[in-house]
Image (tube, rainbow, N blue to C red; front, side, top):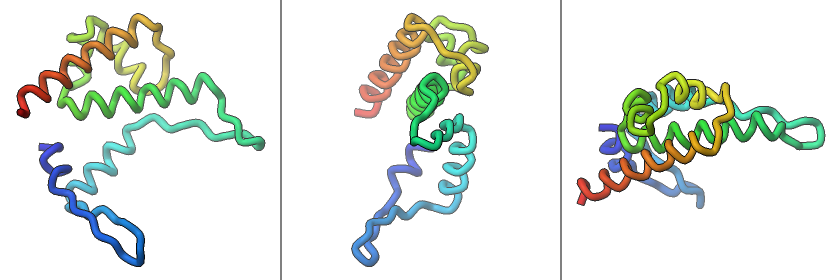
Length: 122
């Protein structure tokens, strides 16, 4: 359902600038989803970002977007990745820094789901 709404997006150009036209209900959903994303930390006076906090939030956002694109719930992704749902929830909130093995499990589970979705969509 969410991907259908995104397929029906139209663009227009006004004064040389490109704009995306979105159904008001889809726009409201996108705003709601954006509010669920962990915030990126503010930069300091020199424009530098705290590395660990930025990495946590950035990774969380990428996982959330991939999970949503595949239509998986947090519980289903956790099950497919072989991790506890609580681990994924903390990771998606940007609370914890996962180990390489955990990121690899999640990435492999998402890749399989994306491949299945691609095959089913053809």
